[in-house]
Length: 329
Image 1 (cartoon, one colour):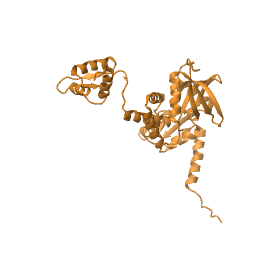
Image 2: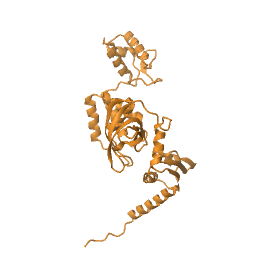
Image 3: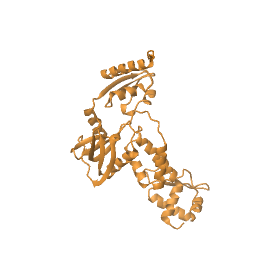
Image 4: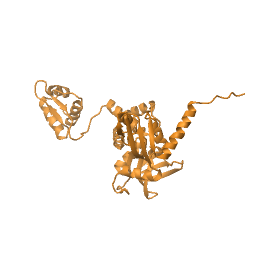
């Protein structure tokens, strides 16, 4: 193989397989001399790929973890698997899948050949995800379009439906995407209203990057932290819930069943723990998440959450003990 760039790419593809390659085997695979392999290894190192060599009769070359992330080569199957995984996580706001994952999906889909993009879409369309139903489903294409506009600093046009169903057209400078684990939000400067706004992404449709570049404005908080701005903005539109809850179960058990957005629990014994946190989520959603922990618990506050749980419990009790069904005549 006399084409040096093509040979380097082939060599890199082989080295990304988790094994050690003898120099003679690499030379045979690429139809070059061991000396050429040594020179190519040096070229890869100059490009930032940490290739480690071992001596001896069974020695060889292998790619190891370095201080920086070099570009990776993916075959068709690997690219499809990663795209499908990222799409599933982004579309259903799985906890821990944040804006970085959406940016990765946007980059990957931009360079996917059409044949692979079709395979990803076909698999996505043929798969029905099993979710808890406490978040909203989002078209991953909406997320990737927004993420690309954020990264490229392009103004964005989109249709938006407010909580009361009012439809509007918006033009904004997208700043950041924020994931709460159950929903995605876009923090952006609304050009028509000349103010900062927070948009629920599941209410966004037909996002279009206009190609018009902009210099990001400074957030009103002054910190540049979109998550902090989002929390403050939500607290203005929805009252904070100052939660104080005791669970009759080990802290590890409770932590595994609570959304990370609700904060950490404090162990108070081998079979008990306590949650003290502030939430800007709805009263109904918090009550549901507490019940889903599946253990005994007592709510010390706030009072209106206690009242809501009491009414909900009475309603569920009535549902489980229905009266006699009257026969129709």
